Length: 326
Ligand code: CP3
Image 1: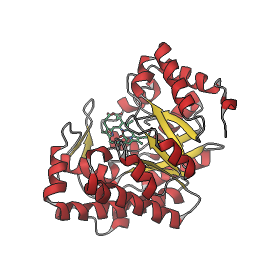
Image 2: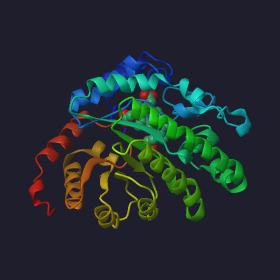
Image 3: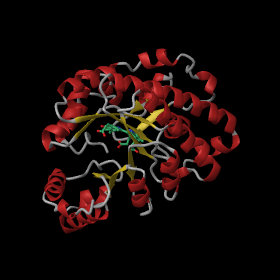
Image 4: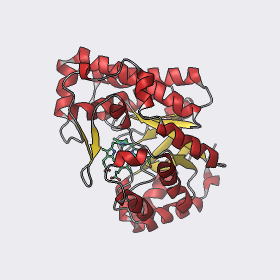
């Protein structure tokens, strides 16, 4: 959850030297170094590739820029005809440096596991249509309702390119892949089925067919009760949960042998103190009968004090896991 990033001074130092954030993602030496920064500092169990979900619109020929202190800006797509997605392998050549970053990390990972990732097709489409971060998501909602056929055609293209992109990440050394469907919560009912469940299901099935031992993490953020439907239908090894996830997930995950990841509110990590300690213990207690990867429910906030991350690790390491019943 933004393991590397602006809360780290060593990241900010490198970031200052680059105007465009995407340049960082395409320099294997720099991107691999950034991926390792949080491991050196905190000795986390997983290394996550440093890149961004918006490299896919870039690969498809859409202009993407990250301006300082302003999130991403994408040149709005007027029509799918402007996008060059017929030759997926050629599109991926534009971002092939990312596979080099993974190869470097694979050579340095030792006993750590390496996570590759991409955005979920609907989440990537959301940014492509909105042209950046949006508060209301008006344009994507209208697009899905009024230009459904075109929207589904784009979802198919994004599903295909995501599969190919993740396969190449697996070839380069990713042990886990995470699919960030960060805006899944915008959709309900049949739209949720067609735009969230179906594409994520296709991605999982294709990847399992490609390499069974690669672990798949899904993150249909904001899905609420649809989290239950999601894990009933989409094959996953790990489900990344957030504050909308119902408690029923615990029983179903146990039955289906799915690991739960997440739960801590990033705001508690900023707050620190007794509140943080209380919330960490609450999360650990809550999932004591499940297999659980301790993580946040969304990305780490840039104003997170480093000592709060250190404190979290200490509390987890001193927790009495022997109370587990399984
Ligand atoms: O976790 C990691 O360390 C891996 C790297 C990673 C980044 N983005 C780096 C990043 C990962 C896994 C992502 C995923 C991502 N990117 C998502 C899905 C997860 C989520 O947060 O819901 C989304 C929606 C994006 C798109 C994106 N990238 C936005 C909206 C922004 C701007 C918001 C912000 O925090 O500034 C980014 C920028 C971004 N991606 C940063 C980092 C470290 C900050 C950029 C900077 O340094 O200027």
